[in-house]
Length: 237
Image (cartoon, rainbow, N blue to C red; front, top):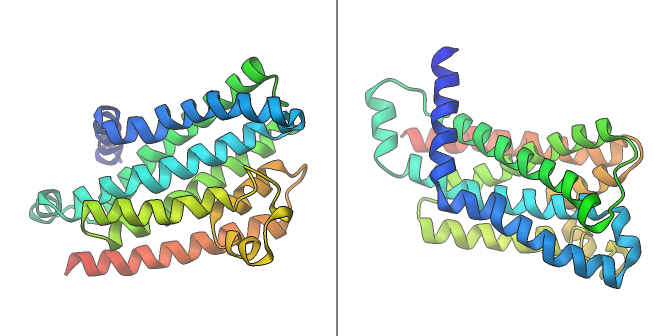
């Protein structure tokens, strides 16, 4: 247990020095919040009621899909994997450590948004903070699970970025954080439901837990976990 906690601590320190993680988990989401938060609340005053949720969905989706995969590619497509094997360290350790570290960073970023939005834009605080943070915890975990598939499946850094962006753009654009989903064509609305962002936003804006929003996220997580297990076996060969 001590070795595992040391590994988490070490990964945390490495991530703090990572420019990619700093940009994707903090700088860009917070900059997007400052700019778009002002635009949303000016053009649509009612946006303040869901501003925390919408900005959080953008930040978590970006931090997970664009920030995590490069770290996994670095581990499993480079010398780090050889070091793991040479020292008898299970390959799943790299996946677990990077996910835990990224999870902490994304949760911290979400807390910053939760505190800053009411102060800067008079955003409405969720009616039930406890339920909100449980929903957030689920959403972050599911988003990272999808990002893990990209990081394990693609072995080239350039291609990893391309696939991450391909998934990131529809995730955010079709999630409902920019404009109501009902305004989208039916095909786009259906496509948006394939991504965690849509269900995460819906879950975090609901006044009570609804199985209709939670169950799809759990199914996506189970699917991603199975895929990661298969991909780890391939990496180990």
